[in-house]
View 1 (tube, rainbow, N blue to C red):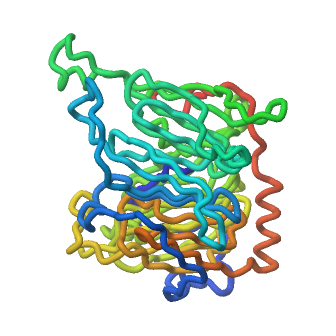
View 2: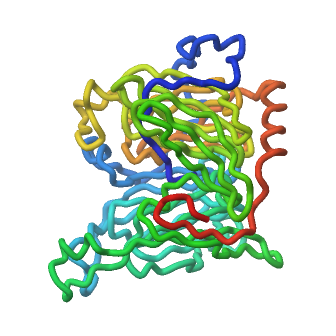
Length: 440
């Protein structure tokens, strides 16, 4: 899922498969040193704010592969904003420039500007070459390469107008399953807004991208009535549920929608609740903590109940983020390296030592690259993997860097083919979740 699911784990025990010979200990996994970019170019007119502003939750810059030969980069621009009549006092208006870039030349083949009204995330990559755009309470989709044929790469189609405020948006690794969570708007005429907000209802809808008569459409698959529905690890066929066995042991269950059989998966021994994120239609990643060190462990699991690998990460960190190349069996993991005891709310240029981005082969855990992004960005949307998993792109202000990644081994190709073959097929059953208890 594009909405990254994170949590603090503690010591993790992998009870099912024995480690491969080269991985007798998670500490023995060697991550390659920071490497030099294979392609580098600058974008004119881009200027990020001061470093201290990049370390709050505001999204300042994004980068996404549209396909193997095109990037979509968004960055802030400074310009005067015309006044909007009756604009809410809580708005924090700003302008970002979206640029469609051709590789390897770095040529900008299309661009537009969007006026945003808050600091929250505004762009998600979907399947079939589409993107999801959020401006305030409006969601729309656009297909930059398809529309580029008629010289209108950013023309969009309205998908949804929220009745209140968006609370979360989750996207499956293949970009075809959407979780959209909304909270009803407070009515100040009914009483104290502060007290009223505690009683506001939350609802979510689940939608799926499908092709129909040669066009891309979105059908509603179901709904939910509890807060946090956008953060549940979900695919088109089912969801991943967390089961607390006791204070130190947690398990995962795969729950197909409808009447499918629940599957018990590998569990974790941890002192704090784990959360998982799908990185493909068959595999998911668990993040954890060792003792009281947050985000110090990362492991991969699959829907056949196998624990694939576990790696211990050095140092203190926070603000984890992931991007996936599901069809290539790879994912990139970003974290902010911090001094002892520093949490996301207290990030400053003095407490954050850098933004580390590592790329892994999902099935084997083989580290493929390690990059230090400058300047570090807490939002963690300044990097992406190409759909074929062969390249990593990192946006560092006006500079874009492209890194070529190693080819998969023969064994990894075999494992990828297995995961693509046995992954659950897209579902058809109606979805209804209540109270966060996994009811379907």
